[in-house]
Length: 246
Ligand code: ADP
Image (cartoon, rainbow, N blue to C red; front, side, top):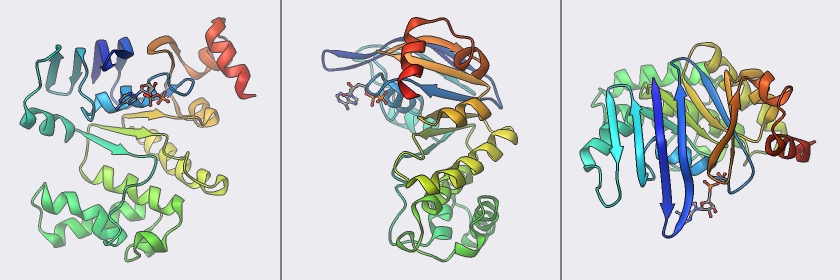
């Protein structure tokens, strides 16, 4: 479903991604792990063109984009491409002046041009799915961080993306709120949603990932099943990273 080939990203003279090759099958959950500053977030942001890669190819669904220095992708292509993805950010990014249900409806009404009634019905269904139907009319400031993040997930799902991208979705949360967000993500993974998750939550990666990608200094050092990465790896760099976490 997603195929990334020889992807590079440079910020000025600094090359942050140095040739990433990656295939993600439909319905799979892929967890990206690695040290801070290794390029995980940049890779995720390249996947929905929040960052435009310097070089390489990304194929997603019907789109096949090729990047080259100085040749910008047309804006309407970027928008259409991005609409196939849903992004869940570290810091929820909900509209503060809108209730939970209004946050989830917004894209459906503004971008998909659905009627408010239709959008509200769908948004309520999604809020129920993330366990927040009773909080539908609460504003973000009336919700805990974990609840806000679950609204963020419902909002991303509302647009029916081909793939959901998560950028460290639990790292801004108090520890006691992490579990409720991971639970929703595990349910989505089990339902066959295609997900790419940048995460520090190794237990989540162990339990929910079909594939774990270990990135260091802008390259994929190793990829495999959770068992291969967490239990069987012989790679020095992977071992060093994992041992530091214990
Ligand atoms: P990770 O998610 O693994 O912590 P990032 O992808 O956030 O790593 O960052 C990788 C490197 O790219 C870091 O050295 C960071 O400073 C640099 N970087 C990220 N975004 C930008 C940017 N917009 N401009 C310049 N450098 C950036």
